[in-house]
Image (cartoon, rainbow, N blue to C red; front, side, top):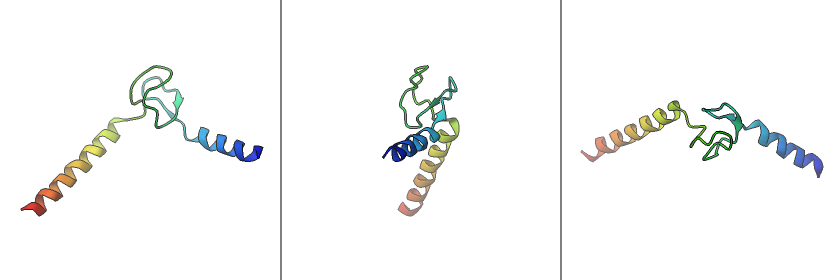
Length: 67
C-alpha cells in the first residue's frame, strides 16, 4: 500500500510547473500562486495567442459555411 502512495506522490510532483512571476514550482491548474499571489500563474502569452487563434479559425469556418 505504501508503494502505491509513493508512486502517486512522485507522479504528482513530476507535474509541477514554474510560476511565470516568482519561478517557484506549483501545480499547473492553480488559480493563484501560493507564494507570490499572482492570478493564473501558469498561463503564458503563447497559451493566450493559441486560444485566440483557435477562436478566430472557428469563427472563420462558421462564417464561411453560413454564406
